[in-house]
Length: 487
Image 1 (cartoon, rainbow, N blue to C red):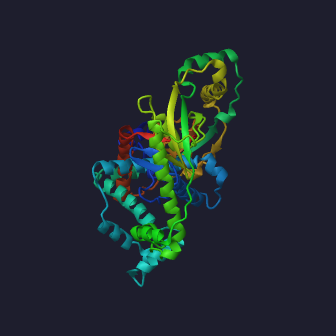
Image 2 (image 1 turned 180 degrees about the vertical axis):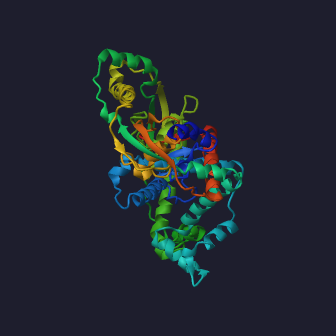
Image 3 (image 1 turned 90 degrees about the vertical axis):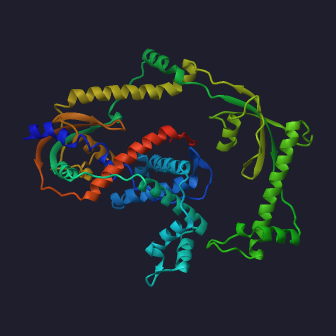
């Protein structure tokens, strides 16, 4: 019976079981469930869409809460780091940004009426069975959200939903029966997880040098940009009451409380002064920039020098992007605000990247070589021990029983089960994306009572498959830049 089912299992699922991770709780998490924070510096950019630090922090918090629920409150920062939670959060935001770029390209928007309808459908803002504007403001204020921020975030969520609503996926009559059979297959297995940590590598200098020669073209020094620059420190002025009042009257919407109400003049006064000082600082920086370009810079202004590269950037990511875009034909950059001070850069010279010598590259090569050797030896160990290994034994498990695979975290277990139930081999091993290897042997197999999956479940699975294909296409269409290392 095991032999027959293993042989025919693949036939049952070949057309549909490609990415059902989404069905069992991973992969594509529902679009539009995330809140966007105030922009506090971009961590990435996809096409025309920037992703801020605040957005990444909030997405990380959302994922952390979900994992904590799965682990029944026993999730902590150590596990979050182990599972690469920050990278997962960024990937979610990158995927959402791809969809927003597509919406922009086709001029899709959310109008005020659509936004209002979405807000009024949310029962959390109801009192006595009716939407209550005061409750709406109160709840946002309690969660430290301005109306402007919340509604901008909601527009993004609704826009993403609109894109997918224009790309519907239909299901056929036979798919329900196929999935009933698929999810009724249960395996009792013995398994063991091998990791790179199980492998020790001794560095052989000759082999290390050969390895470096094969990858030397990828190990280069940073491009260095020699720049001159001037600074404009923040200006602090004293303004007449008439000047402050006029600026307030012309720009009242700039000065709001947390609940979205325009502040009275007296309460807004400090913010008005700050805004005027910021404008004065920027105006002076622009005047200095023009004088700098014309060679008429005031002699009292100090011109400083700096070498800037990817690994040595004493300014910030925005400054590096601006500097690296300069050329001998266009060497001046307009003033950039860095923590309240405006910097104006001029390109002096570009020192191109060069291939590093073995000595220069050795520190980078050793961990790459070590990992490559570990992967080779781990694969050899798996091949050698797959027939005779001793491991843990499960009870009968199905595709959805990822929490029963104790040696793997939920994401890893989902990937393992997906590949297990696609395999037609009784005894072999599976390599996971994170380079762990799972040895397994199917001890018994049976059909459980069919679950009779609902049509909407199949539709969700097919939507997930379509979404994955769409994301891969959009990744080729829109350039993705990540400005933080390690992600």
